[in-house]
Length: 477
Image: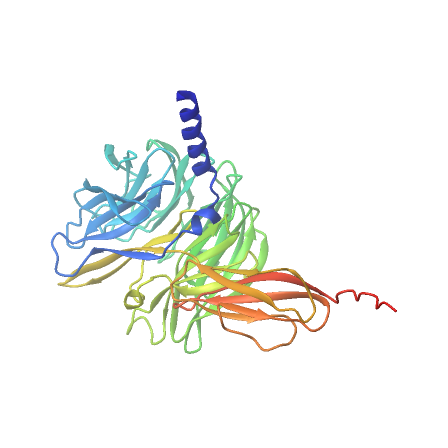
């Protein structure tokens, strides 16, 4: 009896482990959790997040000097499960980046003087040792940086600028999980202001670096580094670019940036291989609804084989209105999958983020914040379950003139849903969730269901129906 019980428990655990992301996503519900509000004390705004596989680690910071930083954790239903823990007593502008490395967290932030710092955390967010400077000491207020965790090396890769002193230049520093400096290399003495450095890493360990380069006419230059961390190849992507973001899908890199056009801005992108050769040249990715559009973060979702881009879109310009915070999903080649607001709360869609978002295997999760002087911060943790349509038919092989029942389903997104049926036979489209349709001619028909949610996202599902003429029975004489 004991052995049978043990086997049953083990079987249940294995079933949970083997659940696919798609199966987990079927139960996903988009939601939003408020973290702070205006005029509250302490006003610890939601900052950078990292996903452990079961928990959302969050670095929070108070919105007034000296801007101390705290750690908290939430489950995938956005409930706080680990209370706030003080990590740093002061910072320049709060947390910079937070990563999960498989066994613990890594926190990056700038000290008030400008030095980039690293602090190692346990799996429960407790500091391990003291914060240490990253690379050369540089206490100037205009330092820029980007950081990525490289699971292949088991290390953090940072790119950062030093604008003054004997260490002036553009640096690449690699840190071990324990904070040990594995390498610290100056790529060039030349830097532009702003440099807007970005870094990503491919599955084979190739490091891709994106930055503005003064000696190349301030072009947006993409470079790859060899095993000795020297530039092995580069290409200039654009001379009309700002606010770039960079990511890798494992075998190639993608960059998205803002470009000026008549009357406003648009988003352009390019794709490159691990030898800095252009796969897709500078191409328009999207035009905003009005004056200004700007990328925030780009990630590759291996489960859906899709790029996901968070961005801000303001119809009257960012100087007048912050714009809606949106999520755009598109294929490797750039074909649109969906474009919708990130928040499930229609009253919060214009509250955006400056931090990377994460994919949990079932949903995209981000933080969003708005800060107002003398009022503090209102901030949120947001869970975006992608809309997925499901079309089904009562039978997929049917005689002509015999009605088939079709049923529409949808999960994720923001309810309520609406549906459009296209039966593939030039008949009128239908909008009911459950509908009957009969075909008059034999053949194979692709029935297309388009589901739409309240936030404007769309998802398509198809089912193939084969129609035949029934055989006639011979008439007796």
